[in-house]
Image 1 (cartoon, helix red, strand yellow):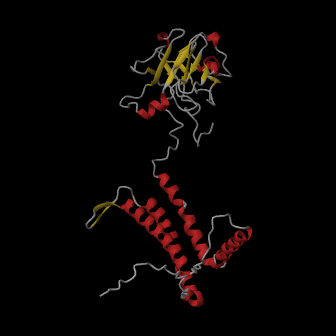
Image 2 (spheres, helix red, strand yellow):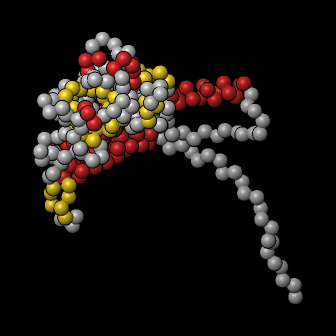
Image 3 (cartoon, one colour):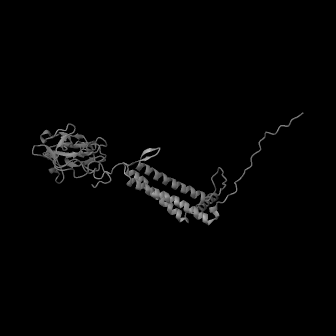
Length: 335
């Protein structure tokens, strides 16, 4: 008795093709189209309002305020408000874009035959025309409500990184332009803190100094970045100083900011034979005899000179503070 076994051969699957296109209500009902357009605009507008709320929270909520939230406990109020505003704004813009694509943009499926060779000019022209037709069908040009609300939402979101940059720390204001050097403050050695007399310096001597602060005040690390000064003693006839700069010296003793005007490194190498100061970082070279004029290297300005004299006891003192900001350039620098 013979048994017939079913065939195990697989028959090829036929191409099911593209399913029939299902039209959306917004495709043929103007009322639904307008409704979808308003919904998209509302979402984009919500994104814009969230950015305004972000700025308001940053400016209006004190940084030291905490609120209690069940489950989460004590929470920083400003950070919570900023996070919520940013999250709502990003969600609203994203949801608006998705809703726009789902309800108003063309959704018809298109079959494109592909082959290995480069497309013909006719095919490229057809593709370009298809792209233009799709852009026109999206209706951005005629949907002014969506266009304006999207532009407003995305434009306002550009404020967010600017606000976040402001939170990096307090603004410097005039801090970069001022130092602790004031008229009458004595020069003290760094390190050591020994008050310096003119008689302590011989020709060719170099000293690193700071201003003597009032009792109870101490130098901070930030002060050292601006207050450091290098003092040198030359023969008075060696100087070739412009204008009244010679009156800023005392018996051949001259003082300059120690902070390089290029990148803020400490200028501490002195060539006694040439009277040159050298910055070890990028080799900017300054001529001491000509008011620390730049003679080599990338520095753009001379080292600021500190006007000095002596008091009744023979101690070296500052006539006044620096007449210009010390150190490298910064945006708000006026000179």
